[in-house]
Image 1 (cartoon, one colour):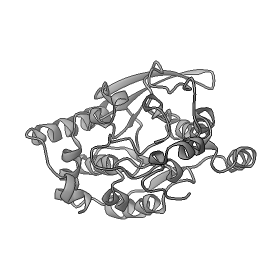
Image 2 (tube, helix red, strand yellow):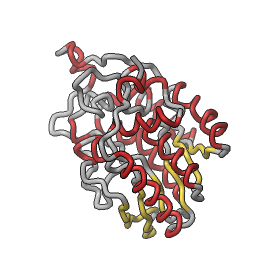
Image 3 (spheres, helix red, strand yellow):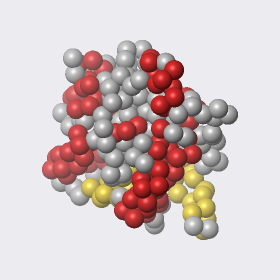
Image 4 (cartoon, helix red, strand yellow):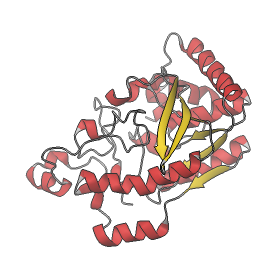
Length: 276
């Protein structure tokens, strides 16, 4: 059974949510220029791109190509460009920095400590993100309150006051799907025939880099397939921390490497691993 057949169940007030999302995007476009969408090419972000196109607002779309994404994810870039007649901007990590990190720490460094995993996220995501957002007044995301405990307090519009390279930066984050359910997302994908990542049909609700993503089983938390070897509070890469940093992961008092946990308890072995 595919993701649409399994999940496409709209909430009773879906029509009102949809209109509110459209109104929010139009309002944001009128208030913030230039505007861009950060797309992970996951289900929510495909919906957001469709809404941007449908409302006709002026917004670019970018993807962080970490060089560790599944091929199924990258294949969506071309489909997105063809479907909506747009150019998706790809932001990639510095190849010299990436090569040095792998040489010094190995390809599986993210499994050994939270510090190494966060370092990997930093040069593959955080640094390219700042390049993508440079000069932008606001960015649009597919965050939903339902996604995780860390995202339960997501607001429709969040003002971010940050320091980037020693300079104060103020920008807004627009979350048009904040109160949508997973069923709402897939209902909208279904009725609009929106392309989606085929990994969603293989029980990957949340899809990131290949080494850090696995399928989930029925009843598991939505984001349990992301960084599954870490404690629950650590499951953010840094892209969507609160303006005050309160969602940032902290090193557990006794971090166990993935390899150690595999040796001690076979139940922690990922359900489905996909090599980078």
